Length: 464
Image (tube, rainbow, N blue to C red):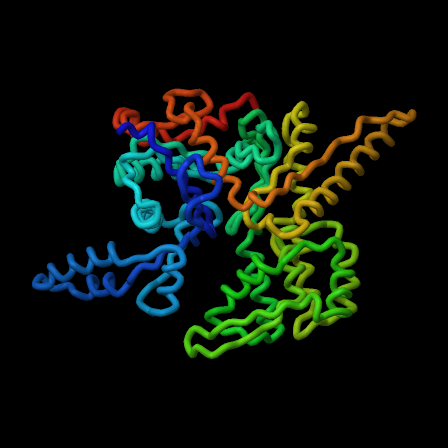
């Protein structure tokens, strides 16, 4: 049976989670943490056994090390229950950091979870917009050499988020994608399906930073959380209870007046002793998302808050490093709405109105309640202020046409990239060869030209 008659395999590898499934489905079949647990005891045994008589033992240890590993939730469970398994995160900040672990992760995804023969399916994988060409070559080598796939397409995740077309009945391929995942945040402008590469903005704050921040707040407040379980509790608190507020001072007052209404309680069991424990989730509910938002509108009120209030065992002054990011990091000094505005302003002038009109949210870190509404409000303020300043300079009662700012938010945005890949890989054009905007490389092309066929991506070859 021809591979083009079978549904393609779509795998969206992220720093925190991997979404995988088959083309044509609405939701991925599996969503797993992007982590690998390897049994290091076999590797240590092969290093210590240096005598020639033990060459067979060394070989067996190496083979067992290659076979004895787990991914996803199983890997996390193994690391908690046994000290012989070490965790490895193959993707960091949106880029593959460990190719051996990445190959093992794909192996388990294909054979143990999707349970398919890779030689019978075309594959669609995703990449961040700033991925190096060498990384695409490595991906092509592993897929064609190790798994012997008949066809491979490496798609830019931001384009897939637009290609999902879940906002309207007509798919808009011009817009700005705010892709905030677990390890990286990107603001990517796309015009007619082509990425405007010179205008891509990267933000070094993402979902993992929010989790670490919540973990820090709970630890400094003295919550009764086991150290080995604190990160997982912070992550679940972020995903289940966090939301975006419109005014941080008013939100503090709400929690102070009605703590029973706003403060949530988390109950868990200590991994080592099995004893139950509980902790409160209070101010973290709205302070956590502020790390990823870093909205400039809060800077005026922040001084009052940290001078006037002390909550628990930590001063609110520590939060100012996020609302005034130049104190926190020299690499990132601009709030998110300003980053989006700079991204659009650096794009070609004839595309700017269309970009402001279609700002698409993608990734799990944009799923906080009212995240899109607040982002639209603050971005609209920036745009309106610039329009008024321009009218004042021109004078004479000149009125310019207002700029429409629209931030698109939808429950499916958590796996919008995967869904866009599912839609794309289910079209007949996906299996065609040498399409200008879609280059699904085949095994025959790889054998003729080598891994260099995966080096470039056609979505960067537009008119801009």
